[in-house]
Amino acid sequence: MRKYILLLIVIFIIIAGCGKKYSLDKDLINISSEWAYYRGDIASSGAVVSAEFGGKLDIIWEFKSNDKPVGPLTIYNGTLIYPGARNRIKFISADSGKYQGYIKPRGVAQTGLVISDSLGYFATAPQKSKLRCVNLLNRKTLWKKEVKDAVGGSIIIEEKIILSSAEGRLFAFDKITGEILWEFKSKQRFTTPPLFDGTAIWQVSEEGTLFAVAPEDGKEIRNVILQNPVVASLVFDRFLYVCDIKGVVYKVDTSDGHIVWQSETDGASWGAAAVSRNSLIIGHSGGEVLSLSVDDGKIQWRFDAVDVVSASVLKVGRYVAFGSKAGDFFLLEASDGSLVEKRKLRGAVSTAPISNGQYIYVATDKGMITCFGVRNDRQKQTNE
Image (cartoon, rainbow, N blue to C red; front, side, top):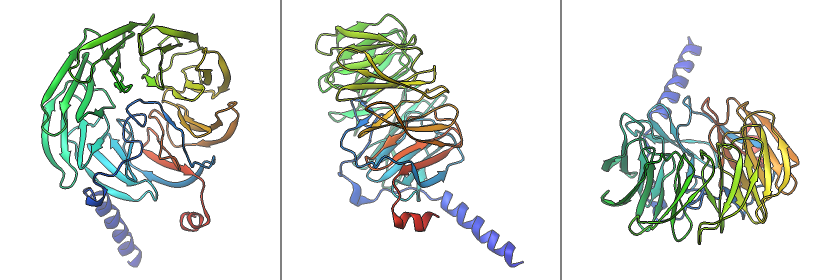
């Protein structure tokens, strides 16, 4: 009988914990945050240059979400934000893995969540198709606007929420009122998020056109036409980089739109590259991860991951981290592509891993979230 009572207590604690609603700590408002956008920042570079990551895949903590991720992960002031398939956006301590609560997006939050001050922004999938602004202090919806089939990964620039939709529209909303400030329309589909190069907002279409628009009014500045369709996201580090569906990688000069070089790989890239300093690192459907020189596009090294690499790769300091559809998670030396460590995860990796500079976080299609890093003695005592 005593065993059953203890079991009921444990079940009650679990249910109570899972039912906890999230409220933002007021002390976190107006504090800068790590990895606050899709791919880390508004340039989507996919790289953490100044990192304390120690180069080990020790498991710091794991969290079972019981639903797969439907949008990009983000980190806001020490909190990992997980948009799940079961009508929940979950908040988890980035340091300890402790569950902090959830908010209900009233739909599938396929864009992920971005935060400015105490306000959170996300767009839900059809049939809901709404962009919502939520006060995270009390979880109240301040405004909502209809956006048909929004693309995962919105950004905030100049007090505007910039969001694209699959029907070929790029929107700018006032982040406080939700007013549509401008709208850029194309006859081509948008399936990847926009980025900002400091001057212009760039959006790539599925047909292979790069559009540059002014952040002030959404007027088109220029466009660049590539030779094949594109399903991978753009990345920026002084130049634009993108890979098309036939495995051709392009370097584009943002000042005039000319293609500096193009280089062929052996497979289509569905995820974005990571770029920093002298290398562009990208995975493809042929099961390889490659490093290309940003100067001339020549391949510096190749790594055979065996299975499909569909999620974006991540560069943290001197290391490259990525997962495969087979559920393998790899850590490589960025300088030569040599294997540092490999871990087997529960489920395929379809969502890009992220980092706060100290730890790497990855989620699988089975809803298992794992935090990797270097475990210290205290963590060994509490986790083992």
